[in-house]
Length: 237
Image (cartoon, rainbow, N blue to C red; front, side, top):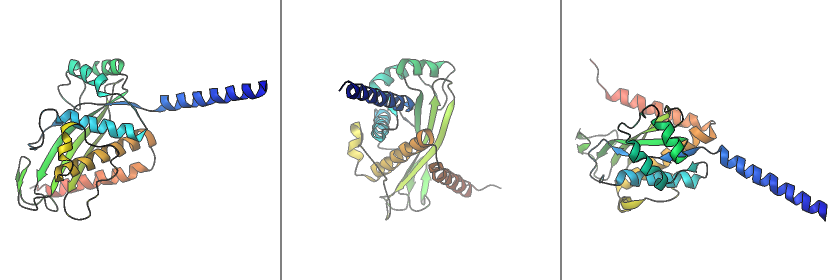
């Protein structure tokens, strides 16, 4: 009986150590308030944090990260006043990491939003407002940066795009739901595009920061396709 108790105790110890190691191996990550560089009509005060909360929920649902809650992150970020997303002042990142426990900070900016998009962004457009094409089609893009809070350097960067409307559109895996007032956009074309971008962001972070395997080939192919499309749309003399 004594041997059985000792064996059980050892087994429990191994399980606890394994669990502790697994938890320590998970990247600790926080998501900052998203910024808007467009004229999207659905963007209002508070949407930046609503998007951050949605991404946070999706990352937590993955189970691959140790996620820092907004309640612990927001006061520190406001105090540090990150003036320019994508760049963290020297010493600021380390302080954020120390105060919040986040090894990495996700920074996102809505860099493009276009309505009435058909195919390859058809119609006439100016500063994110377009005429022509189908009214139920939306295009948006998010510039994503992940900052290492120890070094202050940008560890990962990616532009994630989504176009919704028409046949064959797939939102992808969306594990939780919209946070805050974004819920009212859940059934709109813009909401579908937001869901697609959030799913793509979380899958990319999981691939680049946790899995680190052949999954990156698909993301690299998408990035190359995006760059090629951008080059084709630019007319140079």
